[in-house]
Every structure is written in C-alpha cells, then in structure tokens.
Length: 339
Image (cartoon, rainbow, N blue to C red; front, side, top):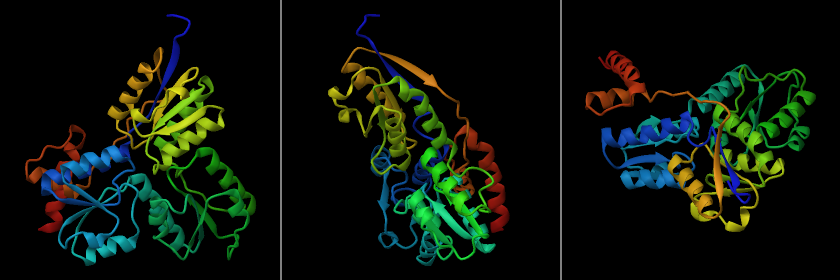
C-alpha cells in the first residue's frame, strides 16, 4: 500500500431498515396481486430511486386521495397517516393497505392512550414532516409539537402534573435527548414512552456515524433531501467535525470534497445498489482502500399485512420465506372473518 492510499470507511448498519423493506414489499406485492395501477398516498419512502422504480412498475404516487378513482387500491406510506385520511379513503370506497412502519404505529397508539387518559401530549419532532402530521392527527386537541428546547421553555400546558411526551421516530438522538431533558426540568412528572420512540434503525445508523466520523475528514451520506433520518446523519457527522454532505447518487460527489480519509453511510430509505455505486465513484476519484465496519447486526423483520398475504397466497403469488407462516396464519384469519 502506497503512502497516498487513503481509507474509505464504509459504515454498517446503513440503508434499508425493516420498515422500509416492508413498505416497498407491500407495493411490489400489491402490484402482483391486484395489478397496476396501485395508488400510494405520498412517497412510499423518501427516496427518488425507490419511487421511480415502483412508478415504472405501475405505482401512482399522490398526496391527494381525490386523485384516486373510487374502488381503487391505495397504500398508505411508511410514515403513517391521520385518522382523517383513513376515514376519507373509506368514504371514497378505496381498498386501503397500510404500509405504516410498525414503529410509527407504536407512537400513534401511545398518542391515543395518553389522550384518552387526559394528558397533554408533547410531540417532539419536525412539525412539517409527514410522520409528525399523521401522529398529530390522532389527537389534535391534546398534542402540541415541539422542535427545540426553546419551544419547550415557552410551553403553557393546562396541568403540569398531567403531561406526557412522544417523539418522531427519525430524530437526532442528541437533539431529542436535549429536548426531553428540558421537558423533564419543566415538568418533573412527565410520562415517557415505555420504550424509546426513536427507532432502532435511526439509532444504529447515527451510532455508526459517531464511531466513523472522528476518523474522517469527509463523510458522505447517501439519501434524499426529504429524508429526515438521512439529514440527521449529516448533522451528527458535522457535529463531530467532519465535512458532511448529503448526496442522492454517485453523480453528486465532487472530487474537491474528498480530502483525507472519507466515510460513507446511507439513510434508511436508500437502496444498496445506489450506495455501492457511490463507493465505486469515490474509488474512481482517488486511491482508496475500502474499510467496512459493522457496529451492530440488524435482524429485525416486520410481517406484511395479513389481508395482502392472504390474497397473494390465494392467487399463487410467491411470498418471501420469512413471510410464509404469516401468510398461512393470515389466510386462516381472513377466512374466519369473512365466513
């Protein structure tokens, strides 16, 4: 190895998480079971490569259910939707399939439970993000969104002893911790989720960057501008002193960025093929030794919706090995409900 060889640190976990895998599989399987077009409310995940590939197969993406013909199949994106959206889909006679990440659904259920118990709910997150909009819709009269410590300091809630908090699943761990600490200072009796709302994949990817970034002059994060978790990875790397850049594809990489050792990771909605093309491009632009490192191994799998699995099995559409038992169970349950 010559003296001018640099290291390209290649982080793992990176890229697709279980919730994203599940959402994409739902659209793919729905296209096989029901045929094109299949309508998807909002981008199924925040990545244009994924969206373009599914669009080419016959998926139609829209943010307005009035664009969906009556009786058509519509899929709710991984980010979740409000009860109002579900009600609108039902009123218009749409066949709805839910691709909401189960970890987002967990936050929705927490919001409902706290609201029924009479709590004021502080939702820590970015108020314009689609996930937060969906969660807020569960109990709009009980929930207030906070994006910063400063907003926590300005809160005026009716009963300081009856406060609970929930969070967006794709936040910066450090920012979230600071806001939660401020909440606990203002409301010492605040109720918190039994288990962290920031999802395992967000935490794992940020923790991997925390290990990698101090070794690098530059960190490249492959992800979409609309992806909350990808943007948080850029922020984490930058906070540790690296020059951090968000890129959507290999073509976005600028040679002048690649000074010293480089780190590369990807947001949870980024296909591995796109990530690999970015690795190849970095190696074309300089003499690099690729050094993979894996912080933890992820083995989480979320089952597909029972109704979709049952329909696929009835039509002979293959399901993945990990879903075969879920498909059989769903078929039994589907027959019980409808006979």
